[in-house]
Image 1: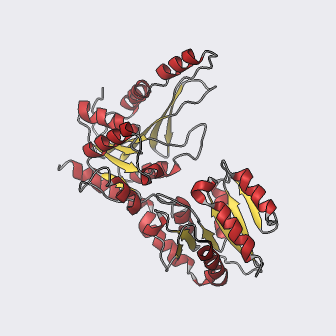
Image 2: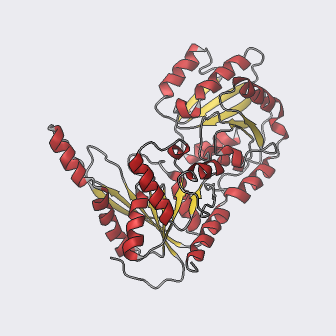
Image 3: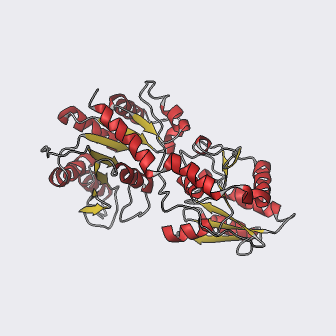
Length: 394
């Protein structure tokens, strides 16, 4: 299928399980940032196959975004009253392999033959990588982000597929140590290398002015799934702290399935729009403004594979309170914040009280440099580049 185009730089095809799309503009944004980091050293194309999207026509979008050739395949979907016919038509027209073939034809035309395939999220895109490896001899590596791997995989077919993908990949790059440990239960081979998510440390940087005001500002950012993020635990902690002090405000950014429930809880606790403010989804510029105007960031999650929001907060120069929930343990320490046990209400309350009194002791420039050395585009992009180069010697 592919024709070889003469290129000096390594050509990398990202197969993205999640990616910003017409239905969810921030879905998989961390994969996009990985691609941007790699593009500093390599030529990059991205292929993304969208999930079923009823009521919208089939389409293949080809764009060039920040120099990255990006192909999004939107399958056809059908509204048919008969359930059997609806299932049959949508199964055919949304077939993963059919739509992958359509996308690969655009890759062939616009990008040529890749030297390396880089899978982001094993299933289902790892299946396509296996096919390209088997029939075209194109090696692949895997970066995994998905939190479902932190729990035992119950579907035997998923387990078999995942094990085969990991077995055939040249490298496996989970974004945190906890995710690496979870994946080692599927495959125990010396091919794991933890490479974190990326933060644009040029954009996320400290603001020169710092706050001298009566009330400290606490920030939380998430997609508001309470089962994962335990935002209700933060609200209960705020309610209890208010009994002894009122020198703070909490700003919650984001939207999701539990937003209404959480807003109703804050009304019930008597803290909505007086101490706690829900601001919904914000763009990058607005997020930066909130970060620059905040004294510290709080994360109370039950599980995280990484937590980009925490890394961005550090890059912006504000300290972190985070739970030991998987990802944050890799980079949160006493020099940049406080780690607490998940589900421990008293530790959360104690940490918030400490930060209200001591957040100003953290040097924003030190926090920024710490983040830059770990999550910067150049650092992460170079790590992947070195892996790609090593494949030619294997």
